[in-house]
Structure formats: C-alpha cells, structure tokens
Amino acid sequence: MENIRFYSEEENNDLNFAKHLASFGDIYVNDAFSCSHRSHASVTNITKFLPSYAGLQLESEVNALQKVTTNIKKPITCIIGGSKISTKIGIIENLIPKFDNIIFVGGMANNILKFKKLAIGKSIYEKNCDEIIRKIFDTSKKYSCSITYPEDVIIGKEVEAKPIVKDLAQVNDDDIILDIGPKTIRNIDSLISTSKTILWNGPAGYFENPDFANGSYEIAKSIVKNFKSNSIYSVAGGGDTIAVINKINAINDFNFVSTAGGAFLEYLEGKILPGISALN
Image 1 (tube, helix red, strand yellow):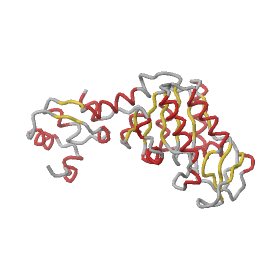
Image 2 (cartoon, rainbow, N blue to C red):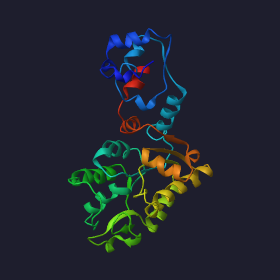
Image 3 (cartoon, rainbow, N blue to C red):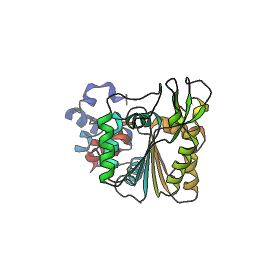
Image 4 (cartoon, rainbow, N blue to C red):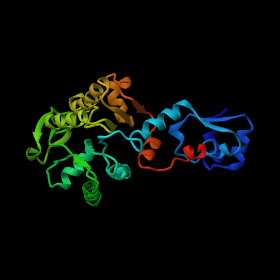
C-alpha cells in the first residue's frame, strides 16, 4: 500500500476510511508504539472492524515503560536532560510521586542553577520558568523525592573552546556551561549504583563536541556497568540519548532503548495513548 498518511482521512481518523482499510485484511496488528499517541484511522478506528492485537515490539515497549511508571522496583532514579524544562514538566510532575531521585543535567539544569541564584554566564536556559521550578521543589518535598543538579561544571567561552572545570561559584559572565564536572559525575554514579531502576532521557551536555561529551558518556558507562552486574533495570529514550549510547556502542547494554519520540514522552507523562486504548 501507499503511505496512508498522504490521505487526509488517515489523520482525521475517518471512520469510513478505517472501514475501507479493514476490508483488506482478516486481523489487525499494531506493532508501531511510536505512532500509538496518534488518533489516526489506521491506529485507532480500524480496531472497530477487525480482531485487533499488539505486536511483539509494541508489547516489549509497553512492558519496559511499565517498569519505570507502574510496576517499579525501587529505589528508582530518573536522569533528565534537554534544553527546555517546560516541554518535560508533564513528565517530571508525573514521575516525582513515584521516583526516589530525579537528576537534572544539560540545559535543563541551568534553569535550576539560575533559580538557585547561581551564575550560569552565557549558558542556554529557558526564561520565565521560576514558578515551574518552585513547583518541582515543593512537590518533591511532599513526596520525598530527592532533586539533584550539578555541583561543578565544564565551561567554554564558546562551544568549540577548550573545556575548563569550574565549581559553580567560579562561573563568569562570559562562560558557557557545556557539560557536568567530575564531582557531579561521581555523585550521579553513586545514585545509579544504589538504584534498582533507571530512566534516562536527555544528554548531560553539548555532546556533539567530544570535549563536552564526557558527562554523557560517564552516565552511560555507569548504567552499563550496573546492567552488566545485573543490579539495575535500565530504560533510555530520546534521539540525543540514543546518539550518545550509540557513540560508545552500548545499545545492547541497556534493558530497553526506546526509539519512539512523542509516544515515549506522552507515556511517561501518564497520558493514555489512543493506539493502546484502542487495543484494550
């Protein structure tokens, strides 16, 4: 068949279109978790006309995500990065009541540092986020979830500059925070080693430049070390996170690596995915 997203009826979840699609088969199998957050004709309404099932890949994805959202083995730690805190606030709010530790790295951590009145120089951060961050700290106290953010950082005067290790008190106005420092790496390693379950979404720095990739690599290596000693269940997801894991050839050293973008994030937010509920 042609790619059915060329048809407007597909994205409009048209019932007659779904019925027409169903006429070509005897059973329906959804093996695309990455599309299951979309209310499209071939994802949801088609299940009204055929016996419908989850594929093996979709089932393994949901089982893995249940282990970091509902069927949790504690202590559980989330390492979350990325540049915008507002895009992941739904995930953070959903996970705080269930998690023991949430570790902020990457551009997202800069928002926390700025909120704590610490200098971040010319570093990337998101404006008007104080209320969001205040709510994160208030909620974490309520549920006894520990919030961790960098103690020291790697800075450059620009993204291609020479890396320099600095404590937070030493960051100047013309510095750009581009990675986490050695103390922070040791702290994260310790939290990973005392956890039973790990969720990782988002690199620790500007990993595109190898000089600022060490923090992300060390997080990956720490998870791999504990995976190999059979002491943790590890789930990673997000394009940049997968890129980091691939750079050190560790894709098979995690219990599960999710390739789904929007569906992965929406599931972590606690949203009901239309493609899953259609099968249920």
